[in-house]
Length: 288
Image 1 (cartoon, rainbow, N blue to C red):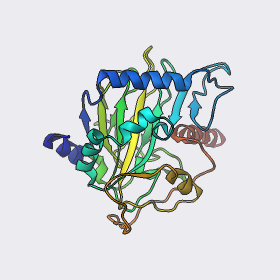
Image 2: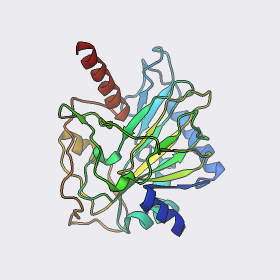
Image 3: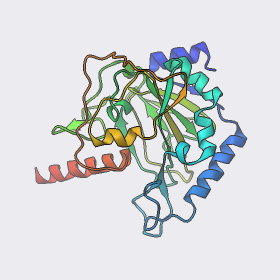
Image 4: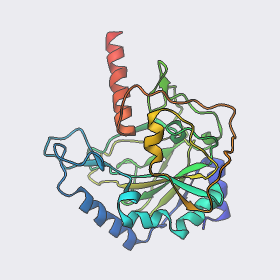
């Protein structure tokens, strides 16, 4: 369970940190599972429905950037996603009726782990209310040198920052961001971070010789319904399931309006969308 102070931190700052949430033995099992999933995959030959490779490597390179939906595909991760010790904490923040939305593992390989630019999660999956969060589990010691999470505290209560350019969703904040008050969330392996869906966050590239793997599980209240935003809606809702309480048949609305993303084309992940956004920006600047 979260302490009253941790619950207060979440609502005040948009996140709270639980050091040692995962015991060492469980972290070791997750690492072993990841090693098995990644074994034998290269940039030239890998299962693109299950993982995404780091692009900055040779065709024989084995560095994986992301594993998709581990809680759906692998029981070891699935057990954590519906465990009482985790859901008890999520219930304290979102209420008794809970859906899991998605899961993923961001890998951040040594020396090359990709940047993640400022964004707010809810911009990707508009809901009828803001009762949604991500739980990030560090599976390696995380520091600023290997690209730990950065969050702007307290900004989750405001309106959504702009994530569009020329009317198209970019997957990253496109207005100036004051990151002077951003907090780097460093922590040892086993640390859990409960982060509000509207908290602006980012992470730097991994410039160290130590990898930084993070398991991410996203939950929402059962009365937070997905707002239709095109074919991406059906694709992303495939993995949504009830993990506690009961399904709700009435949507709860807490916002008068919310931007619906219009995508510039197909993309496979946040990384891919942000990469394409940066490339497009550079091309526009060169033409201008």
